[in-house]
Length: 200
Image (tube, rainbow, N blue to C red; front, side, top):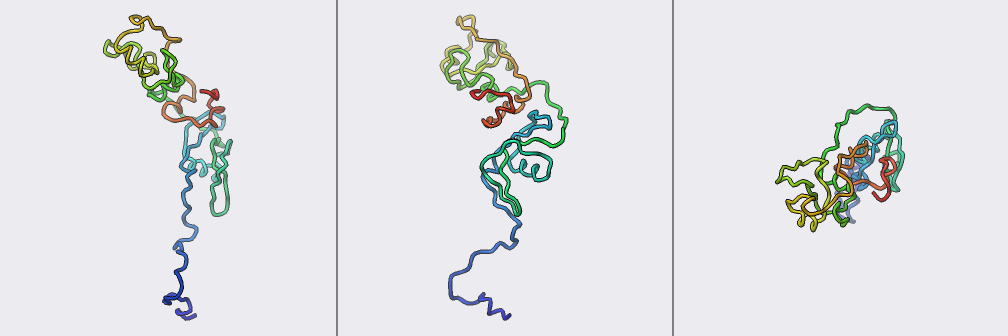
């Protein structure tokens, strides 16, 4: 067929649709694949959080099974797979974990229900029960969630000086779920597997 028959040099008519030089080689990144997925061990113990893209790869490779999925579909060349929210590994893996949950602002808020331990209002900051200016430590048993008003009122005074009391002494959280809660917002669909109440 002559080259002119392709119409590549003819100025007549609008240009045709742009063609991918490598058809099927790339897949547009769906917004859902930037989300997170809870990864469970074969024993259903929470292990970590992975990206939805990683979860899809694990499922397609037969290394994990979907436990809970979203309504969004991930379209590949030959298959359409619901984007996983929770997946379970097909084989058990042994992973060493630190003895104590890392202390962070988010973890303290999660432990204390995002409420001020002094008055019950919404927490906006953390407070050292025994002030650091007086030798208090930055540790789980001395850090609590507090509102701005209580934090400002307490300042560098002790609870005894103010006549305040705590509903319960602060302590380090325990359990496998806390390895995830210390640094990440929890998807409500993960709560069953993390052993959390719906209102936590």
